[in-house]
Image (cartoon, rainbow, N blue to C red; front, side, top):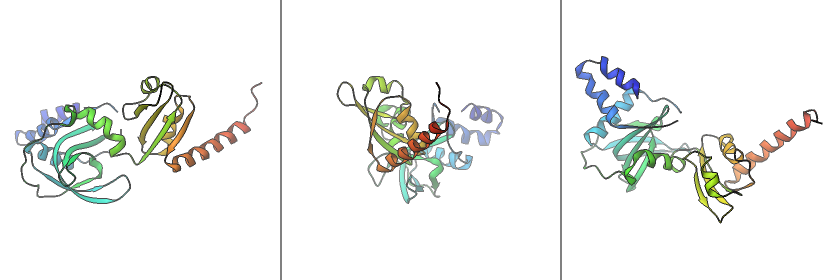
Length: 221
């Protein structure tokens, strides 16, 4: 975001409004991911600024493609990854889209009257919605530990649900099962995989790898 401010200072007046639109249409979040071309960002930011519907092709986390038409509300930056928060016209609900998976279409759609932001806090909406909206791999686990203790040690994108006084269920998303395994083991508590079976298979392979590594190491007597 500091780079945007520096860029705006050196641009000629006729181009400053484009960077200003991008800056005003974004909300920063703490934390990394693929880069997005500046032409795509400025095009989307312009629709946010001008309250114009945006049409685009979108590739979901499962690799499937779809055509979307939305009322763009705000761009959100999280490290090197960009998200668009928008009202999905055909689905009648708020959605979060990864910008690197979007291919905007020209021309843009008609103007619209902006809706009230979901929950009143765009950054919080995106943070809490990342697991459901954009991660390629997801898992639900039952941890044998109190929810409060677990929540204090996990990032906000992991949802923690209490299940009695000494257990909880977490819902996490990541770009790989290896990263999900980090969430499962970083707390050093007993846990069970609720879903999906593929994640349980991944843990079995990892466990076998760890056992082989432990068996080849000298005894620490």
